[in-house]
Length: 313
Image 1 (cartoon, rainbow, N blue to C red):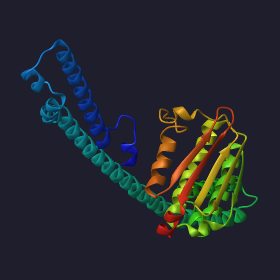
Image 2: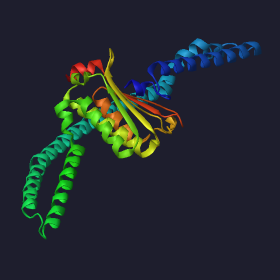
Image 3: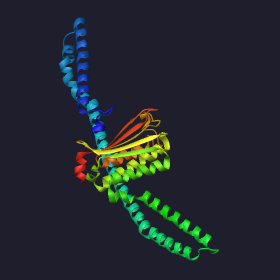
Image 4: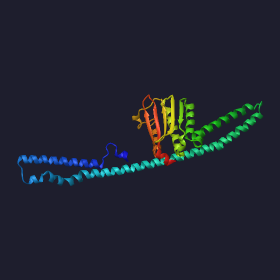
């Protein structure tokens, strides 16, 4: 709500009352000027009483309040109520988005386990049996065809393994965030040709499983944006815990972007990609800091405050 109250153009109760006092002062001064004119012109009697500044101010105050101040106060209260409703709506949307994200991650994990335990296992057994068959058919006219089948099975096993890791890397759940990000950095470098190094302090075990998954997905999205848009040659990812909380910094030496356009772009560099990350972090009590200059690279820091770490532990 503070963001609403502090934004330009917002009217507070103090501003309304200050405006009301200014109006009274102006009315009083105008009446005083009229009184002086009447006095100078020699008019006396009833007009002196009717046009007395204090007398007129007292008489006009209820009218001014009813005509000017009360409508403004009513409009102000309606606006405040609308802002409260909007704030509550935004919080419900963040909650819904978080639940959808958790459900999506659970579904990813379930599919990945099924692929690994069933399809991957079956392909491995098929490969072993086909290799045995290849040995029996050695030096026959069928050996070439069987060998092609073995190669195809091996490729399928690699594809399933890669798809499984894309869906939900087992290393994230088995070894933690640091190990998963180090693996991700290696994958990123291999696929993009961009040098990517990772440095973690080993404090990822202090994070809850939900936070580790969230931060991993955010890092993955940032690296995807770098590969698509940054034209970078080198990327560094650092992760660690300090007295304020847990911080992850993703920095590249690419072309950067204009921060003033961050709210208007929709391509994932300064638009929905960063907005999505920011909203997911906000729901967990975290935040995102963005530093970028054209032709001077970009540094993005994901922050989870210490209080949120304790709450989620």
